[in-house]
Amino acid sequence: MYGQCLGFELEDRGLRFEQQKALAVTYQGRSIPNALRLDLVVEEAVVVEAKAIQALLPVHQAQVLTYLRLSGLRLGLLINFNVPLLKDGIRRFVL
Image (cartoon, rainbow, N blue to C red; front, side, top):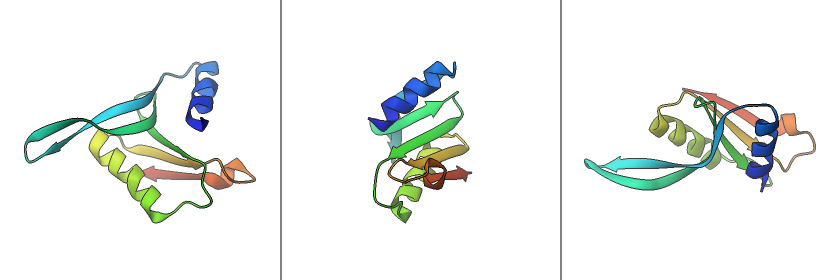
C-alpha cells in the first residue's frame, strides 16, 4: 500500500517510475526471470524499497544493496513508513 501511495505522489510530480519491476537473476549461466521484484524504480535511476516495520534491520539494507548490484543502478532508498517523522525512516545507499 505505501509503495502505491508513493507512486501516486511521484505521478503527481511528473516523475517516471515503475512499480513492482521484475528483475531476472542469472545463476550458473541460466536466467531466472522474475526472480525479484523491486517496489519502485524512479526515473530509471533510483531503486526505492518501501517498508512499514518496527525498525530497519541489516537484512533490509542487504536487500537494497542486492537490488542495486543486480539491477546495475547506483542509488537506492530504503524507506520505513512506520516512524513519527518520515525523514527519520529514510536510508540512502550508493554503490
